Image 1 (cartoon, rainbow, N blue to C red):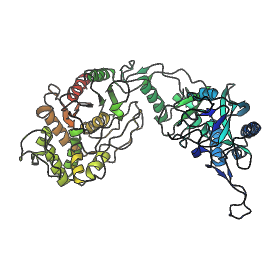
Image 2: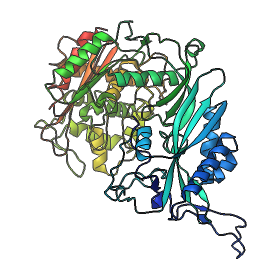
Image 3: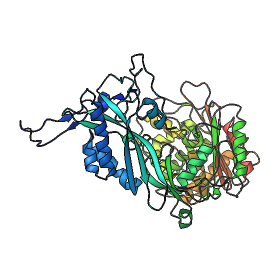
Image 4: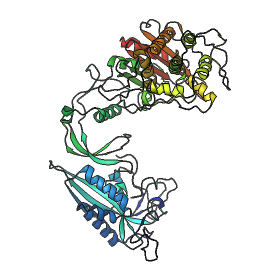
Length: 591
C-alpha cells in the first residue's frame, strides 16, 4: 500500500475539485496577451461538471494524444498545459517505454480509485455526498487541498474517468499493465479538460516524487558483518538494512561486476532520498543477490545491544567507530525498534562537547598546564555554576577537563575565542555539519555559527545552549582525537567519505589525548575506565533538559582503534548510565 492519499473524496462518478487545485486556479490564455478588447478571455475551470459525453470525449482525446506521443496536444487538453508537458515529457524520457497503449475505461468508482492508491474509500452521506472534510480531492494539486478546512463542496465538480495503460519495453517481452485515473472538468469555453495532477501519470505518484526506469538489485542472499559472519543485532532492523543496501548501490563508485548483476524496474522515488522507493514493475529481473558485507563487528554489536538492554527501560543509544578508517563497528538503540537515535537523534551533549572547546582553546594558545581558574560561577550575565562546590583558582586547563569544570571553560572560552570559533572548529577539524553520507539516514550535529548572546555562547562551550549531537557525532569527534584525522563514518567499505577542511594539528591532538587519558585514569571517568586505561582516554558529560528533573547521561571514550559514545535519556551523570555502556564496548572490542 502507498503512503498517504494522493487523491480523495469522490461522489458517484464525479469528483469535487477544491479551490486550491481547481476552480479559479488555472487560467489558460488564448490569442494576444496585449490586454486589448479583442483578446480572448482566459479559459478557466467552472463549477459545473462536464456532461457524460464531454467527460468521455475529454478523456479519450487526451489519452489518444498521449499514447501517440503528441505531448503538446495532450498537455493542451488539460487545465495546466505547462505542468502536464513537463510531467509527460519526464515520463517519456525517464521511464522510456518503447510503446504505450492507453484505453479509456469509462467512469470510475471511488472504490476502484481507493484500491489503486492504497487509500481508504471515502464514506458517503445518505445523499451520496462525500462525508467529512480534509481529504485530498481526486486530481487536486498536491498541497492545495490537504488543508483540514478543505471541503468537498468548496469547488466545481469533475467526472472521474478510468483508463487501462500498457507499457512495452525494448529488449523484453514483459508488458506493464496498470489502471489509471483522471478527472475531467469543464472549462469556461464549454470544453472538457483533464484536471492535471501527478496521479494522471500513475495513481501512486505525488508532486515531490519522480518516476523512472532504474537499476534494481536482488536482496542479498545474506547480510554479513566485516568478518563474513551472518549479521546479528536487534537494532539492525530489516528496514534499516534494506535502506543501507539501496543507498550503498547509489553511493558506491561504479562497479562493472556489480552492474552486471542489476536488473531494471519502473520505480517511484523521492529525489531527496527521503522515504522508501516504490517499485511498480520489474522490466528485467536482477541476478540472485550475493552476500552484502557491512562494517559492523558482530562481537561489538552484541555488546552494544546488551548495553542498551541493560538500561532497564530507559531510552538511549550508542555508536562505535574505528578511528583509523571511520568505519562504524556497532550501533544500538533503546528501544531497538523505532528511531535510530544513534544516527538521527539530536540532544545537548553536555560536557562531552568540551573536547571540541578544548581543541579550540589549544589552537588559540592555551596549554594543558596553563592556569585556568575554576570559580564557583561563570562570568557571563547569567552566571552558571558547576555541579560540585568550591572554587579552584589554581587549576590548570587539564585539571579543569578532568573534573569537568563548567566555569573554567566558559570564562576561558569567552576570553580566548571568537563567537564563531567553536562552530568553525567543529566543522573544519571534526567534520560536524558536512552532511555525512554514512549509508543510513543520519542527522548532522549542530553548533550555531553565530550565538545569539554571550549567555548562549557560554552555554555552547559546555555542550548546552543550542549545541546538539548524537552518539555517532560524538564518537566521531573522539575518533578524530585518537587518530589525529577526521574520517567520515561509513557503514559499507568504499563509500565516499567527505574530508574536513583541515586536519587537527598533531601537537593539539597529542595534548587532547593526554587530557582524555588523564580523565580516564584520575578524573571523572576513572571508576568506569578502571582496567582499560592503556592507550585510552575518556570524557564524561551530563546535559540538563528543560522540564526534566534528571540530566541526560553522556560518555565517550577510545581505546586503541575503537571510539565509542553513548547517551541515556534521564540517566544522570555520565558515569551513571552511559559510562558503563561505553566501557562494555571497549572491553569487547579489544582493538
